[in-house]
Length: 429
Image 1 (cartoon, rainbow, N blue to C red):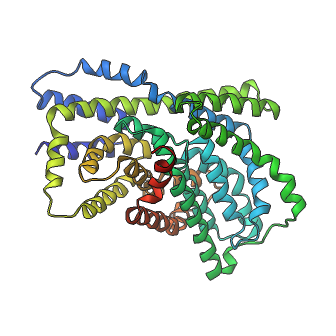
Image 2: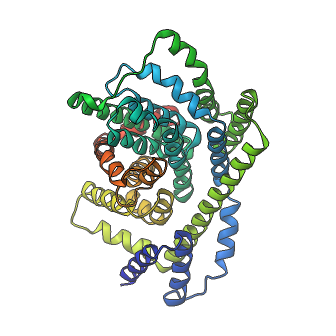
């Protein structure tokens, strides 16, 4: 009955529009007042301090700042222009450029929303100019932006690793192959759609080898940054925390070389970083405190016992968990969904025999699906927000084939877990 009351109050408060971090703290205090045999109010201060001084979480503001510096410096514009001539031969033309640019930008920013907004701002003027099917084009932007959750350095993976005590380097390695696979499946979706409906592919841009080679220098900064940040982790030169700081130094050097390192640009980047970091840390404080309250109540242990006694196989239970995540993703943003559910769901998945690293990749994929699932899919609203008119339904219709693509990749990972585990097992054992 406590679980029923808890879940009911949780959804009622979230539906009322309250900030999720405040909801988590309120529920913790309500559990303390109604059901716990001791007063844990004083633990809120301790929880807040331990969260804000947690070494594992330091990369969050640094990776956010890294992405903001890339965004404010105009690197995405140059990257997009450099990639377009290389992909013009594929059916769908610039829609493939949308996806690949999102993947590359995600590999430096770690943020899905920033990726969708940045690439969308650069790409959307091409829809009418070159006669693309607008709905499918919008779908590539909203779906491509979700790659920021899966491809390292992913902020969501850092949060998952902190909540479950899972190795972040292993999570990063586990996300690489599925991330590349998902980008490839997105591109295949565009190819199939444009072969069925050739008019959807728009007019191809003029391209020759001179244009392709001339644009290559603009691809070096994001690729070099990815090699420095991720490569330094696996070369044993830096921890994820140190690598995030190293990435800041590299991107500052890049912006200085490009002569865009200015006071106003830095001010915008720092301000946006502070706002995003404050939101995430408040969520994490609420999640840790609620997890502490639920642990004393015995809620997680009881829920685990109930799930283990269900007359279903572990695969069926996993399918139920995935379905629940996709439904919750319709009303919660990615990080809120992770901090709210992972402390409860992750122990259950481990007891069912699933690898926590593999399960982390599955969580990233279902969160990706939630970010483009109506009615709240946040990436859909981001893309709609940078359009000049039009209906939100255009975006919701455009993402449907890509939502199916994400579910297909999830099914492949369930059937073949080594897709995610092969690389971390090979390099880290």
